Amino acid sequence: MRMRTLNIAAKVSAAACGIVFLLLLLGGWLLIHFEISLLDMFRDEHLARVRQSLADRQLADNETLRKTVEFTSSLLADICATYLFNLENDTILIPLRSYMNYPELRAIQVSDENGKPFVAIWKTAAEFASADALPETLGLNQDLSVTNSVQYQQKSLGSVTVYYTDA
Image 1 (spheres, one colour):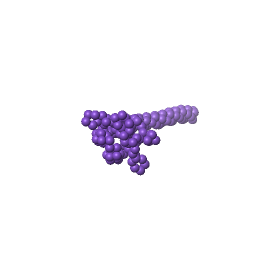
Image 2 (tube, helix red, strand yellow; image 1 turned 180 degrees about the horizontal axis):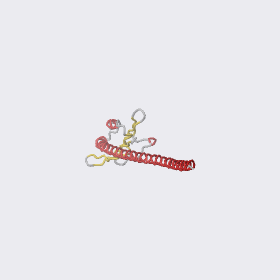
Image 3 (cartoon, helix red, strand yellow; image 1 turned 135 degrees about the vertical axis):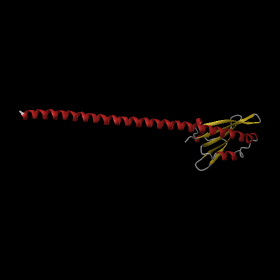
Image 4 (tube, one colour; image 1 turned 60 degrees about the horizontal axis):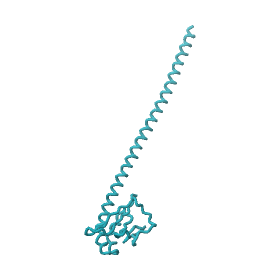
């Protein structure tokens, strides 16, 4: 009888150990799965914050660039006033070339009071090129341009359009 009791006790003990072992396996698997999900959530949240931060920084940089180009354009309008008043399209290129050294500028178009091109300067691969008007092949983006009126003694003489790049 002692043997039979030991057999039953061993069987109950083995069954209880088996059940505990299965519960430990299930709990471990659930814990690991939960930790993986938690890490994925932290990673996704961190990446979203980084992307938002980069997008905010890009917007701030673009706004700063636009303000800088607007300021440059207003300076160019003041500088071009005398040249435009005296119809000096050759000598006007001297200050325009200096401004074209800014890396963000792509082209400058000076127009007379009728909107007709007076002089234009733009960047090529190695140097600056100039003509009366900008060539159509440049593919300039109008959204990345700033236009200012050229005034001389309270009289409008034309406009200066500065094309820039945000790259």
